[in-house]
Length: 495
Image (cartoon, rainbow, N blue to C red):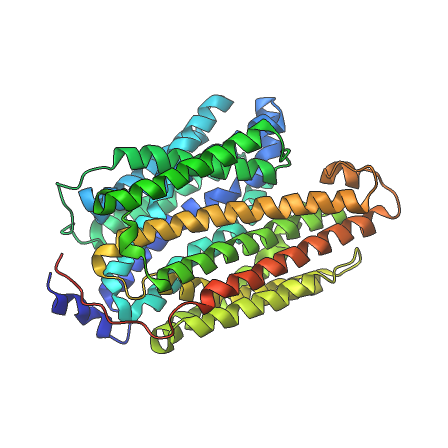
């Protein structure tokens, strides 16, 4: 493919039918994989009763999926170069469908956890592979609009997952949380067979960086596991947390050293993404992901512990986030393509900050409308931030750098979201101990005291935590400001 041919689609003002069909395929497959990251959370208690085991043990149904997602992401860049995007998309989708079917048929807890891992391996590759397909087809001129499409599953998953999970658990067997994936993904598979072009960009000579894989995938999984455990209340001085985080961190650092030395032979060629735009966009997205996931875990906890609401009712409080994001996401991508995404991303961060500041004023009697208004404002900002920052990740990068950029960006978002969840939970536990003398920091134990002051004291702990989240949002502005104002034209090489 010549440089001229590659640039041609980027000059088109509108999304052409081929790109639109490609986007439909990606959305159909990716939406369920993202939903599955959160849909099972509300069924943990039901699963524990059905399998007659403790909640700490049943939590591996969630953890196994998360770790498999994390381990699969680093493999996407190499697999796409070796086998092609269409092949890897369909393979990943088949893996996810198979895992979903087996999860629904699971006969024991170990079998369910094993099948969740299989499901997660497929789900972990679907989003980045789909993102690569869209980025390559869109070209720089339509990057913002394409990233608006890619952002839809990532935005809807944390919002709709708990709602859908609550409806299924309340009215059907928990097995339908997995069976529901099959018709959606089957339609996506049929659409992929009809709409996806045959692979032309693949190299049989692409070799797997085995050492890089052995460093990055386990390191990332250990790091995410340690942060998840911290978010679930594990002691920060305990061996489980320290071994996971320190060990995982060391493996990731070792990978970076190895990747710098290996150059284009590394699992992720870091030299191809060493631009100010990529560093600023991914750095901002890393910090922002931590903040937004902190918000999304704190609001349901506040509703359930302080207000005594059900998981489904708590999930409805987050629904305006999805509504707000959909409103701004419709135009943010087009505006980013026309004027550049830097200032729109900054404006989005400021909107999210204002909405989060509204949550720092909560009290036990705060009405749902006030909370939902703040969440709506956060959603409006999120719809500006996600597409713009994702598009800015590719600013100034040549076509051959797309796999490395996509893989690196997805890894940072995954770790950032896990870090944000953990940090929010840890700060909340510390705040509870500060507000309630003698409290362990455990939410359920604190709420069970049933004193007249308990709701107020717990609310104070939540608002203090929201202040810390607001600080993280402000911090995310620093790398975004460092992004170059104008994209530099980079010649597209033959592939």
